[in-house]
Image 1 (cartoon, rainbow, N blue to C red):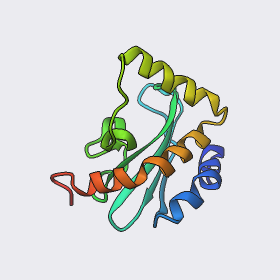
Image 2 (image 1 turned 120 degrees about the vertical axis):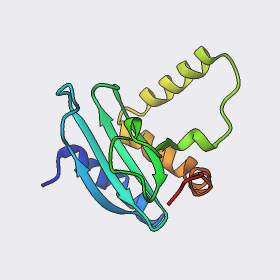
Image 3 (image 1 turned 135 degrees about the horizontal axis):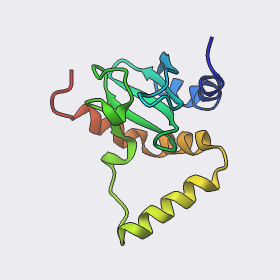
Image 4 (image 1 turned 90 degrees about the horizontal axis):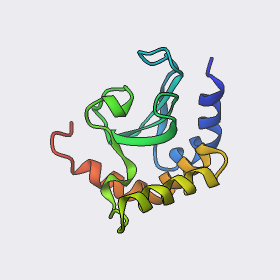
Length: 138
């Protein structure tokens, strides 16, 4: 049985990931080491993985990409996992302004999974190329 978060990820992100060749791989709803809520939904394709997570400790919902041999663990703590934007040009300007703009964008969505969906649509192609070129892959 999937949790409400996993169901929402499948409903909102499943179709976007499916057209990119991903299938649901694993649902991990185990609390983190401090007992806080943690949900990590793993998807796999023939050449890479994507995870969508909701972390009470980090206070965020986001997605990460990794080579196909990366472990199914929260990417913040596991080797191989990268944020989708790692492989794109980073915004210019003072870091405080960049962070504030990103925070406002995130909160403007209301539903964080819609923000994650739009980031996958926007950044997946560059992230896919970047992760394929990552040394030590496979």
